[in-house]
Length: 138
View 1 (cartoon, rainbow, N blue to C red):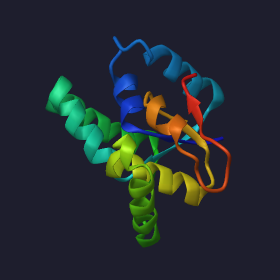
View 2: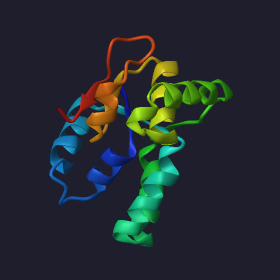
View 3: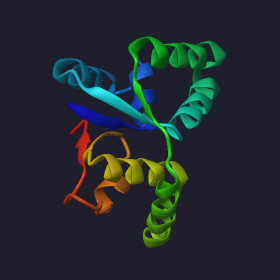
């Protein structure tokens, strides 16, 4: 089973004190998800991990991407046009480029499962190709 993971879920997985850490880790391990990291999520996660925990945790995250063999999905040219559409359509939500990229990639790959703590944004969006996003943890 495939799912897309966003920055907030990554931070929660790294931060064992996060209230969502165990539920996220349990779901991912139990269901054996193939996690897809949209390429714009990586620098955002690295920045936040470094700010919150320091450079060693940032490096560990990058090493985990390599060793666990996450799938990194690179932004395509057509995704950029879709990101602009999303940002214009939902400009009142202030979702930003990274969330727009997650949505565009999810639509292109036809994956509606997203690991995120950002329910406000992802519950408000109507993706192309399916009725809604399945957001984890519930």
